[in-house]
Image 1 (spheres, each protein chain N blue to C red):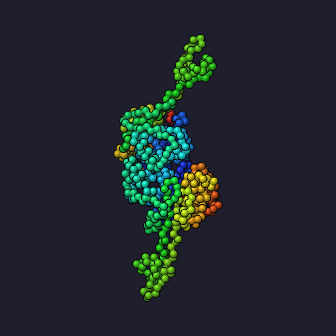
Image 2 (image 1 turned 135 degrees about the vertical axis):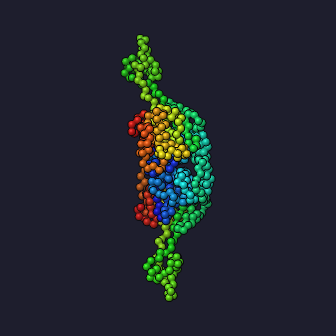
Image 3 (image 1 turned 30 degrees about the vertical axis):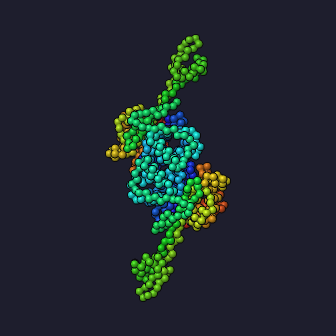
Length: 307
Length: 307
């Protein structure tokens, strides 16, 4: 699981920071999370293959998280995309999108499979061979949702030497990878632990933007390896964060600490901050393993060192 | 008159070329022409002051010329803009814009003064102290309009030494700048030509994108100093240009030649071209004073040398 950050500004982009967008690469399948203005140019710049994006997740209907979608969908279409695109967004967005595409007489070359987000509880919105995605409610000025990407436990890894040693027929291998023991022709039971190694630990990534601090949020992202949490403001702007529905550096760090996250990435920085290193320092007073999200940088889930 | 190019791609932006947008600086007032996705980031990058933009011109309703407008208007509003914004766009765009702003619950902090573009003839759409702007029809797949910015002839420049020499009172100066003679106390008439120097030649800039070639276009931009004309395709793609409503390099050059333009800038390049120097070479076979529009480059109207 490798996360590439495409945009880290809040509502006002700067010359260094584009509006919100992340791409998660899980098993060479790309998941786009939020799609601020300029996302398609950032994808190009970072040489990310458009054709591998089949799922787009929109956290909430503020322009700095959505206004890149019209251009991206048009581009998909001009590139002749045929595969359906799975779009997950607050429930009323499908009508808005369709009406805006109509206004511009845009006829997409592919279907949009829309999943509406709503409600006050975590909901599993995707379940495939490799991972599940769960949306969970945030607290912002409009309905907003976070996303938790969790790898499934892979099968056990069979030890090649044992196949020869015990003359294991090919038809038995699938069952052994799932945990079965093997019985030799003379009836001896070979325990699975002797034949296989455990799979690597499943990894997870969570995206929390935009939101004010609330205690329950940590429970939605319990034990996540890599946590992205907005930190629009420095710690002195607690009141402003509360009234605008945003978080301070300390809010983000507190949620990371309570969740027992492996690593915290902060982003969605207010345009007032040119140098953001002091924001990282603030968060580290509560959660030492904090890093700044930077446009174009990639971060590995499960690897807790500097990217 | 200084033109800064912010975007030179056609519908598919590349890592080097953003979608269409130009800024014309005329007497320190900024005119934004088209507003493709990412325009606000390009404005930041080129250190162009948002507050000096009071007029935005949209040539036609294709996303690569418009999709940056939602973000830019939101940003104006977040920056607390109070001055009205003058928007010139195809006639049905005001409804589209208002409905999309409503969908996102965006309440702008300023008024939009909308001027609808329509019809088959050149129309003067702006007339102020320093310049006029005329829109004229292009030929594209949807209604599309070009824009001609023409400086007014400035007042004559009074020669300071003559004021002392003839003891000219301040109240007479305005009239002399407009061309009046001066009569001294003893009744001698001093001809205006002795008191003033002629103003510099008024400059002009025209924007033609998107359009297929048509002969009458040259007459709309007759004698323009700096002509921007789209050249989406190389000269071999004549048929493709015609069916998609675009121009080849030779089409652009032919219009520049027939118009007697001072200099031609070509842009709106198809994503298939990485190196665009051969497109310039093609256009130069017909119109030698041709240059490529490049993101972030500025060009002076009236200065016909390399930028």
